[in-house]
Image (cartoon, rainbow, N blue to C red; front, side, top):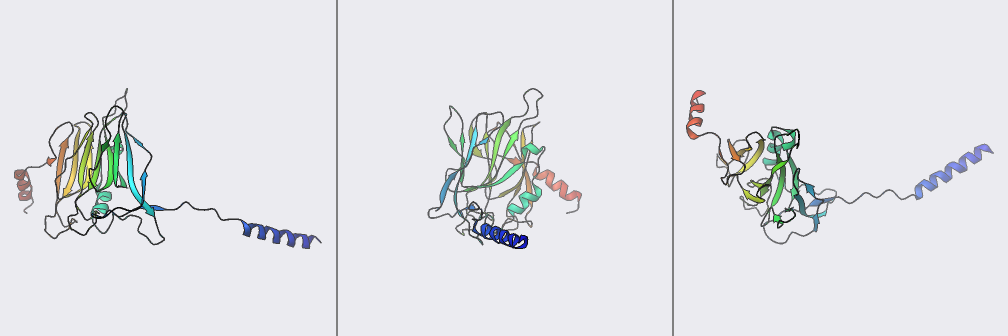
Length: 254
């Protein structure tokens, strides 16, 4: 009798378990590819705000998203270009707090009390990275964000109808003190890595242009180091002069 009971209980447990509904997984969404023409179709998403240390500003990321199929690319910005790989390999900073974060936004809003909302992009584009440029640590006040850096793509240089990692990238800087944003990096180039010195409030960037004229930005092109100092109206300038570069090349017999 005990054996029969055991069998019946086991059959009941199996049947009950089979009737249970499997837990539903939340749908996976992905940003839609950023085409240069036609509407970006999908659902508009304003993400949760990102605070800015030591400031009353917040960043509100904005993207157009769609449901991702089982074999659908989860990152339509990455289409075989070298920029995404290079930025992960060479990205560095003086401190961990000044590192760049990889994102895929179609725009973002910087919002502050008593200020007008600022759109990072005035037209169609992709924000692929952002990061905070922090002040030197103060024992009393800690650190605060002096500026926000955004790496953006707005120019379809290869005319393939998409804004992606094969196109130029520009570095936009939002300075907290003045509540202004503008591009500071050279045009028709890609910014591969960024580093910030809080002591001198200088932003350094490794910039790659198509130096071999093959229509691509990749490891065959020679990078140039640029620098931009906060709170100036200048754009980034090469760190080394042409004369110094020539002397370096002579020193190695190039």
